[in-house]
Length: 232
Image (cartoon, one colour):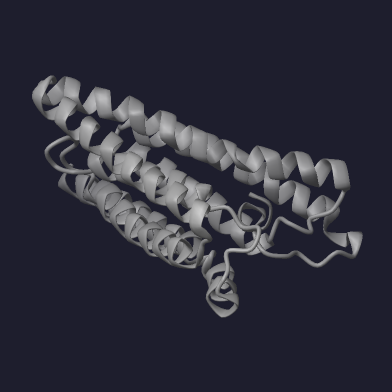
């Protein structure tokens, strides 16, 4: 029995570590976009909204992974802590190089994100007992993750309409799938539907992206930067 329990713990930890590693690939994927912004000293036609959404998602999931909300899932906390740092760096670079009106808008949105996060923390701490606190924050994290995983639906629709994978880089789609699969397994090992359900949905969407990639990859178009950066 001890051997089985030990193996279970090892598999759970391995799934969480794998999810962290694949998530790191996603976190660094916008770097070429921000190199371009720094070189040109302009945000051009890029939008900062995806990074605002990503920051809010990371903060909510980070809070869900804290021991005070959900004991025993520290790897959810670590991955979203790293993600929040990356998003803050990207947003800071964006604000520095944005034009006046866009700069003010982004600053307002960042303040709004932290205000929403602070409200979630205060409400969950003072209005909910530990068990119901996890449920409250868990539902918020599921909603946030599903919204994030729904963003590839636009890419999937574009690929089908254009019959081209021009804006769907293979390695980014693969990393998304593997991250979702890893955290789906982590959630199953931890018996936590707030982790397994949204990542299961993300895994299905990742499979669809990979199938479409192999279906349309012979169209002759070279994949470009992630659609999130190029078209948002």
